[in-house]
Every structure is written in C-alpha cells, then in structure tokens.
Length: 165
Image (cartoon, rainbow, N blue to C red; front, side, top):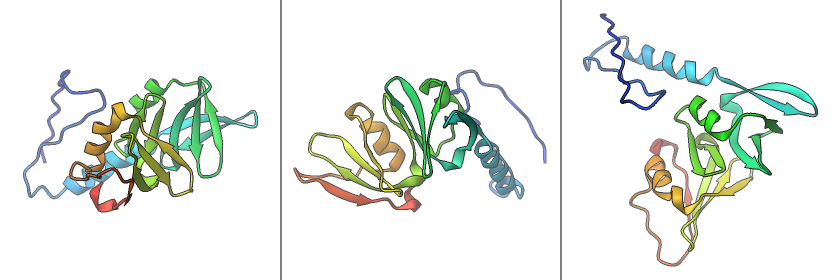
C-alpha cells in the first residue's frame, strides 16, 4: 500500500479525506484506527475540587451555564475552564452543536420532539433533556438526517434510529 499525504488548507481544521481503491484491504483498519484516535481524547473537568479526566465517549454534552463550561456525564456534572469554541475544535463527529451554548453527543440521544416554535426538544438516555436553538435547526436536521420530517402544528416525537447516524 502506498501512502501519500497532501495538505489542503482549504479543508476545515480536523477534517481528513482518505482516497482509496474500492477494494483496499486495509481501509477498515485505517478507519477504525482514526476513530480510536478521536475517542482517546480526555477532557479535564473539576468535581468537588478535584480534577478528573473524562473520556470523550462518556460525555453527554458540553453546556455553558452562568458563563462556566459544564461537562455533563451520566454520573456527574464537571466544570471546565475551557471555552466552548476550544472544545469544538477537539471533538469528533459524534458531537453536534445545537445552540450557541451547547454541544451534545448524538450517541446519547433517546428521542426528539419537534415543537411548534421551531425548536427541538432533545431527550437523552439518562432522562435529561435540552432544547435546540432555531438558528441551528438546519444543521441539526442535516446531521441527524431529518430533512424529510414534517409536522403540522402538532409536536411530533421521533425515536432516534441509530442506523441514521
């Protein structure tokens, strides 16, 4: 297998494009390795005056509350000194920004509820919930493949189908 790296400053930071022949045997291994690299990221968070390093796959969401970044897991709420824009540069594609103040892990979505006012109520597997902002609705629909979902004045509950992701 030949390997060639071409740097393209026109690509967004953190984006890698792999070109290969359809029958390249090592491609699944390369993809698995790349995914593992992004999952090994640890985020420092403070809980009860102690610093913990939280695995990326354990994080349900990053939320700004009272100008402080809160890292939400199923067990605890951690605080961080990082800014949301800094976190956004370090996360993988399983995370989605849903408002100016929140980024969520789509693997923890249980179901969605479309509201009349154009927002989406997002219910997590830990029974927590949050709301998207209307400004981010097109990005959310694209990321979750909801373009063909319509509702006529009634809230619509959509179970999340993992095969869509």
